[in-house]
Image 1 (cartoon, helix red, strand yellow):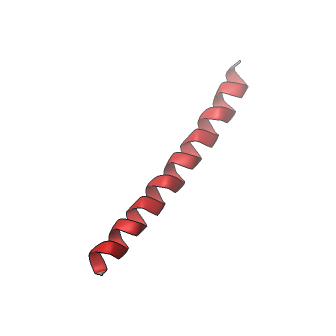
Image 2 (cartoon, rainbow, N blue to C red):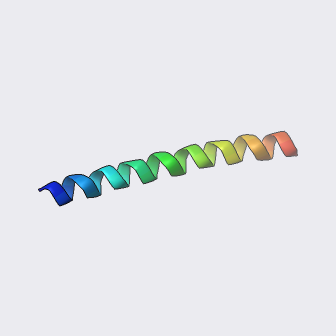
Length: 33
């Protein structure tokens, strides 16, 4: 059970991180061009 929770947390963190990176990249490209 603990391993499953850790995996879920890792997946959530990764998805949040990717979402933030996409948002930053979109803003950066909009700013650049």
